[in-house]
Amino acid sequence: MKVKCIRPIALTLLTLLPTAHVMAEDNWTNRFSLLFGQKHLDKDDYEDNTHSAFGLSTDIQNKSWPVSIAIDLLAAGKKTDNKQGEVTKVTGGLHLGVRKYWLLNENIEPYLGTGLTLSGAERKVVKNDITEKQDDDDLGYWLSTGVNWKFKNNFMLGAQIRYSDSEATLFNSKVDTGGIYSMMTVGYQF
Image (cartoon, rainbow, N blue to C red; front, side):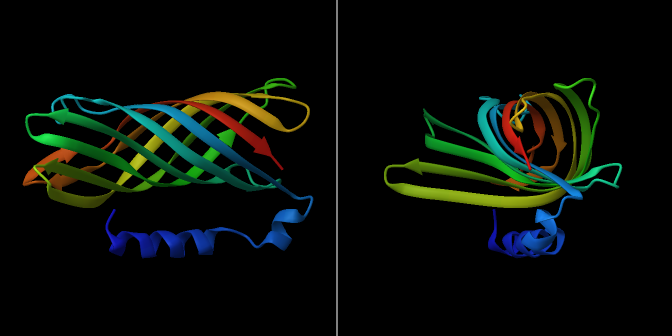
């Protein structure tokens, strides 16, 4: 991602995150999860369209709110060797929005989420010790659904499907940098 995109992301995070004192009070329920899996990109733009993906997911919610504030950071990428050389492709972004959880019983918790994504993409080609690299960023949107299995010690295991939509211009070509994430999650509620 370009440096010009990192500053707004950092400022947004600082303004959205409550202070540690507020987070420690009993009227807040917050979550932190690690995500890992795959991202499936548009096959017309990427001949190798399945990339490894990982992410961090945070939910901040006052118990009186109907939804939580979702702050997620996701990345996906793949490195290949072909006639062009060693090609590294990376996509991802900061997903900001809301998430709604429903507790069906003691353990099963489905959810839906949506919001905006500040996305970025980079393509790097290395051939004969010459490196060409381009990156671009965009504003898009995301939608997700998933389910958590909650344990009594506040740990959670889950699965999530997420769709994001954004595009970038890399090496004079417009490419769809969004896609479908299929992720497993490991989290903790505090």
